[in-house]
Image (cartoon, rainbow, N blue to C red; front, side, top):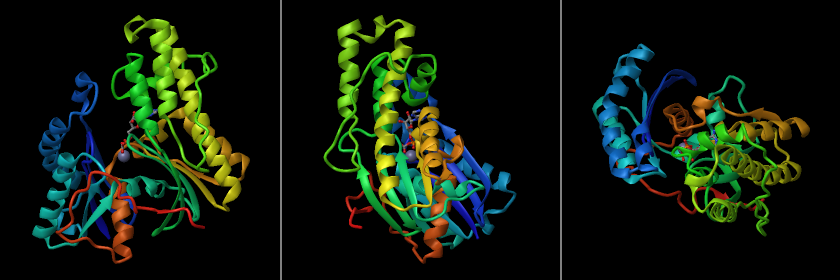
Length: 341
Ligand code: KG4
Ligand code: ZN
């Protein structure tokens, strides 16, 4: 089965073609121009997706060495994400599905991330304990099989990636913040500043807003604003902040490993590109003798291969959306059932 995947939920336009779970093409065009605005400008993002999607689609066919008629299933991200941006990929996909007379599958972007470990050579084995850390979401999930996902916990305020991006801004590192914070953190002392991590009542929930505010207070108190922070101090703040995030993320993961009998531990989403988080999660997998699956960096951030893969599994389970599928900006409340196990 040959599946086309389209992804345009934020600032990456991506087109992928997979055949029988093998990636034939996975092209990603990143919108670096948002840098000068300090964050993603939704309208500019939509326009850039419009410009890129057709050339990327043509290039993907060339790369995959197939004519478009060989596509069996067309899929696109329907949400969550920026609505104008989502509509570009979704409508392109629906139009293509109509013209090729092939089924259309709308994919939840977060589900794309959740199953992205299956794009790797060494695949996860169910049940999987999955930590999703992206720009908009932080979720700890028990993935029992292709269609059964149980939510153990989520963030009650900021997502992990959002915290990275905001802290980067506070200390003058620019956008996108995550990779910049990591770069500075590598040169800094992780124990230089003690930033607090939240201790929540909900067993597996997260909160990053207190941590973010304490970084802001520290910057205001010590330097008034980001322009006065010496480079070495930026590294220490970045390293200490990253250390707090690693601790916050991993303590719930460890609790869940002990409580649930899973075969695999998986870390996915844009923030899964972070080396310190990858190392800590790997350590936990080793400590508890679990299989570890963390996608290669290319498949941590937004990519269409994960959308195509998810669509292939939905299609195999007779889940097809048709051309009435609509874009949705946020994760539906009932997207994953809450913990009841
Ligand atoms: O999954 P993703 O590409 O987009 C969303 O679905 O949100 O995640 C983007 C997020 C951004 O917040 C970005 O700063 C963060 O992932 N990120 C990182 C790193 N690389 C990307 N955060 C920490 N360390 C990194 N190396
Ligand atoms: Zn994403």
